[in-house]
Length: 241
Image 1 (cartoon, one colour):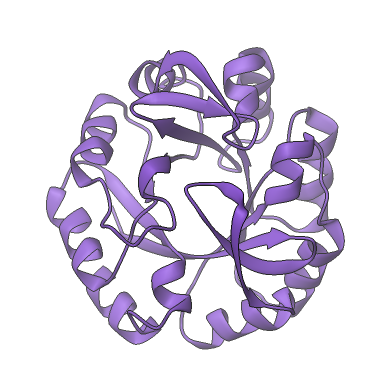
Image 2: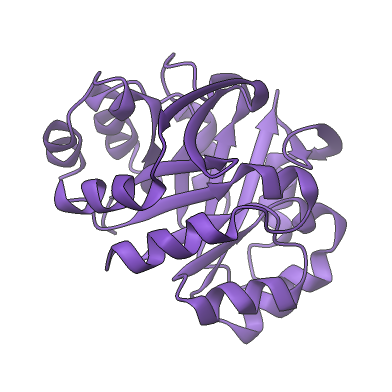
């Protein structure tokens, strides 16, 4: 299994931002032009882009569609998109628009039948977003916490045909405190679905640690460390092998 890096482009009101622990009131604006940021990441050598419609995650429907379409037009890199995808019509509209892989988050808890149907209908193009706060799954843009553990949710969809699971430790997201390698590895060992780590990547060392875990971890999302210059694109890509 290869190890892919996914530079994050988080969209809030059409701008590229990073949040701290998912708090919309703790947003740092890093770029006014998401399409230019996408093109810059592609030029730096990244093969994938991870795009999140933050407003959409809270609203339950797409809210930064213009910015997403601009990103799709600006680069040939495959885009993995999450935020506000709650039904098949929304998911298929994004696939038709050119998104390579759509992430379903909150709906996995609230509408599991939709997730299974989407995975079956669009094999290889639907990923499951599992966001955990103290091990429990959070939904609705992380505003709510469910009574289901991340591990239980992953196991529930182990046979769904999902292309990947994006596992985020909310306590670490945007904090540059280091990725939760142990929890990510435990999840990856528990299910046959490739797991992508998210939250807390502070530099090349975290990438090396995730690769060393050798537990079916297929990659990681990197955001604030890149934007803050704590790691260069070249160093991150070298660490990913």
